[in-house]
Length: 278
Image 1 (cartoon, rainbow, N blue to C red):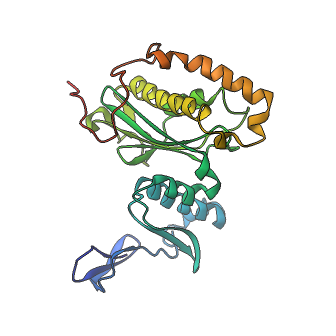
Image 2 (cartoon, rainbow, N blue to C red; image 1 turned 120 degrees about the vertical axis):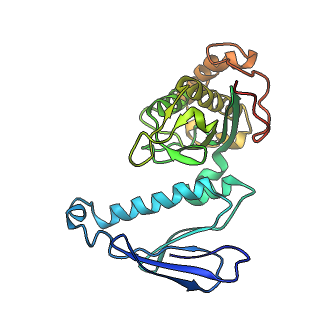
């Protein structure tokens, strides 16, 4: 690992093998952090035996970087394997859509819908893809809590429910959502890989996510025609799905219904002062 902070007169290089540090020394002051991994699991052959094929494990490594890249658009990321670039994204702090397109493919860019919601000290922001963009699997569903990527069954169920009336059967949505809340309201230490969490108010979090997606889909469906310029949008089935969704989302127009909890005014810009949780 070679790293150097901006403005530092010298960098640092650290080399380890088998979990033990071999050396730590000064390095040229090249801003940024570079990590090189070689001969993984050389000293744990039993674990190596249960690894999948090289291409599969490489995809896992690349996915780990993409998860970090989506959470930190202000940082540039580049991944290489055997001298071949796999993923490269310059810093794009001003527009998360650029990072999403670089990570998930340029075709998603024109389908992205900005979403934002705030309920009882829970803030949800990010982007969802319009119903015209869907996948065969859930590989493009990214949810974060206080900047950490997570997978939560209840949260995923709320996401599926929000999209259920507007996606063809068997298809999955694409989205990048950031949930911010009081750290005391969520336990991050319930899974060895820190992928699962335990919310004190799981229903409140799921409601906030559902509401954010519902509002975003409603505005996207009624939005510019450019979002509906696909064959799917011209089918009677899609028109019927839109009608069903708008009927179900109608309570949000009057700020009533089972998910109308907490502050029902138009949500303030993300980052404004949170209400007192007490």
